[in-house]
Length: 451
Image (cartoon, rainbow, N blue to C red; front, side, top):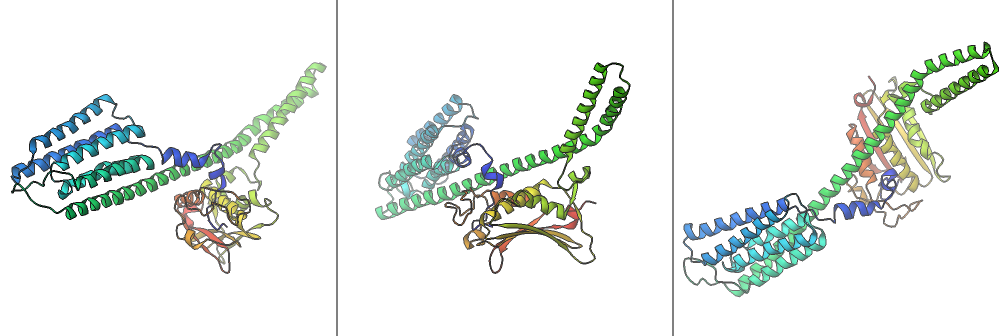
């Protein structure tokens, strides 16, 4: 298989567009801050600011400029009401609009904190809220701008603010303490924004990859259903077409005029043509009956898996083998498009990186069924092996060692693994000795065997 171990099959090459652009730009680099989210977060911050002032004035009897602080809070509330009235709650803000709105929030919070002691006030941590919202909803560039504005406001508050309110009129905090608090606040902004951003990106990628998995599975199921429909049509239409052929032969034999005979011959030829078409639609590689669309043997399965790749490369030999425990009957398994698609992808990837041979093996015993793809290529790299099973894991930027030079997005292995796990398989991957890579899936026999 590959050094990257990320089969790409149809996942990366099928779309008639730039898949990398669709996945990264459209889903991850696009802002999705809704007006409703912004308004709700603002109301929570404003409520928190009011509670802080109430606690300081009524509970602690601190000396503070309460009137100017209330004016700042009311200004924030008015801006929020105006935002809620001006735009529908489901509207997604553009990047510029979102940056402007979040900058207003930072300015409002910084003005309030500046009247209450600046960075000497522990509630200066509220400055992190707009940046966190930006990290969760905006692309990187707007996030950097919003974060930079918040960091600048934090450092300004460390040197420019009214005294910290307390019982006394003039509590003292050294400039060193205030600046250190400002630096700590900036560090908090950076760390929390980075953490939230990374979590959002990973969650978005996972959701998108699962969406592709669902689409691939639905497509395979439609194809499987189409094959079954063709077989059923061939079976059901065979009898009426045979009747038409018999009647046409009688008409030919007893035709009163040449014109009627000619029409009867045309009718018989067209009926025979219909039967040929239906035979081709129902034809399968193993010449099985209609039940092939519901069940197949392990040998038929591995042959289907290697079929598309048996003659794709003169340099690599692709073989299949089936073995089982002694005195144990080989199972007939349910036709699962997930299994066929996933292992076809693994074999395709193996062809790209194998040195000379690929072996697809199926083993069974009384309790389990295992299918394995093994190649004699360079194997998994240690770095990739530790991350396999996650979306966007690939070391193919230059396709080093690849026979085709294909550059994938690293989704293939994740999608194939997910498809197999949906069928109840336990998927493992490891390096063989002395070389090569192995991908294996194991099922409890009761899960895949036809009852």
